[in-house]
Image: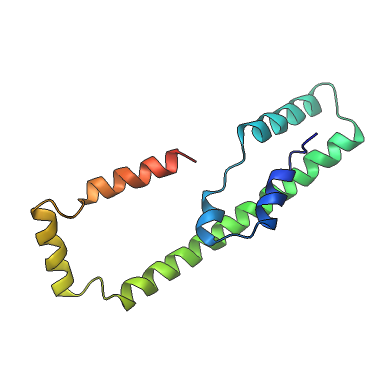
Length: 123
């Protein structure tokens, strides 16, 4: 039987990047298992093995929340460094993007936001 925390352990063991850490979401199976454990803990009680499983999952979930917060910081730092290196905010580059956008060869901010929201909702 798959323990609730196995998915997080596997995710860490596979190696990752800041973007993957931020995007990580437990599967529906894991969510259902944790909900079941919490529900039974409040009503009928858990075996010692189930209590250990739930406690280990909650510790790893806390660790993942901390990792996500740090990963977001790394992504922002990387994004700012990339923008500087590529000189994204140079006046000529801004004019070029505006021109491309005006003729339909560059996505609008609304299109980019919609794509980002679509990606977020798929996780």
